[in-house]
Image: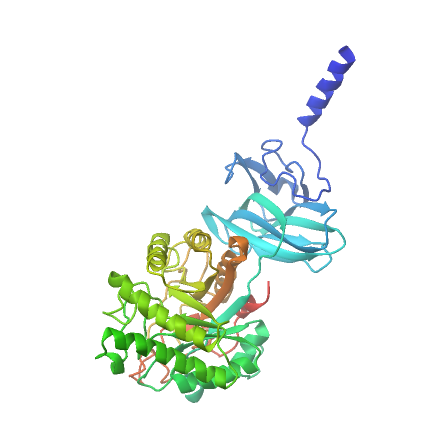
Length: 508
């Protein structure tokens, strides 16, 4: 009996000793709870500045988290190698926080292919979930949580998982609606090294795989009409990219603050409006199909938070709005049953708005395939609020989510006489208005879409990457002298050269 008791006590004591890093087919101690607050958390190994790697109180769930921090500049990686893996696609997910831009990451390496990383978004208080996907061959893969930080730089990690399946972005797009007019008025585009090329070719070479084009009914300047959409669509498809057609159902801008009827429709009865929506939608899409450039996705309305075709289609009378939206849906499907219909709202961090709107849509029988979201970080809430909203609506309504509009400035400067809309040196905390800040913000909002559970993060569309300052190509289609308040958020600089943010179109 004494020998048995001694053996049991010995085993119990062994359980209290932190386990060394070991090979397994699943993550060991992914919540960093085992072993308490210690250096080199149980189940993990450390490479680099060992003192900068430790678990401590303050976990997202449970009591503890992994932290990287040092009073001096440091480089460190917390890692473990998984073995016995079946060949296939795997995804590493983690909840994270970081104190500075581009200093920390999660990674999969030694998996049979080149290392892949996803960087941590900046945020001092919000936990953000990110993901990285890798194809594994050879039965093994190394999970890495890394930082290369300046003195005082910090990062937190928690709830790390490694599972089969992919988290990727099918859509990496840009809205180039201003391009045809820019080119006609002398706009030119160059690679980062200064070689002049077609803007669509430059963007496609960077990895952009879809173009969004808006449609106005009878615009004052003659652009963004059916004829110009058809012409640009031919170029888009020739580049091998997908096409998203964005119907505004207006002669000018339609957004949450204005949804004005086209002049030709102002005297219509409601029944005539329904017919006009169907006929206009069908006419443009059928012409695209006839020339061999069928739309892959279609927005029935643009940022329709308050409805469209005011006053008949206001959300105050959601039954009317539902009929108009279903007229558009029916026209899309009559041309091409495989084309996906997007319903698009702005204010992507406002979950209460999205729940109210799409609950109302469901109650009124609105038909659609994809939820479209505008998220501009300087207007629409924190990155955490954006993630919480798109995670929720993807699950609640069982639809993929498309970030249909986003952008960020690369400078506070102006390239024409009109003051830009966004002029702050740091429009969102931690992301300066610089080429690096612009690139990091586009990367990080794309990472949030990528991490939507169950593969429902469809992708992102950068709004107007080619809208540079060209005389005559301003905001107001009725005023040739109007300026452009957006050129500091394009993906071409003031010398018309490609900016680093274009790298975020690359597959991930």
